[in-house]
Length: 124
Image (cartoon, rainbow, N blue to C red):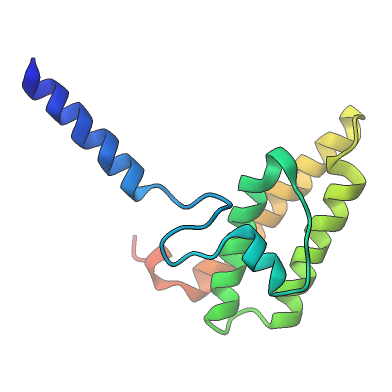
């Protein structure tokens, strides 16, 4: 029984160590606030901060590796903030749904940029 508990604890620790950073950053990853400051941007994305952070972090990796120009990186952040202000904060179900669709599309785009720049995502 003790062996099973030890294995469970090891799995839990491994899961925490391998988990991607949250909006606070971690390891060598900058925080959401630091990423926003790179473009003179500050926006509070509320409950959507983890998803927005994921998208901006992927875009930042592509930017840092020379695959995404700075103006496009900053434009990406501005578009997220504008759409969140217009749709994400809305109490209307249709607007909220549009925000979620927009965020998912932006996350896919950012991941595509990162995959083009980051060979670890293509290692398979």
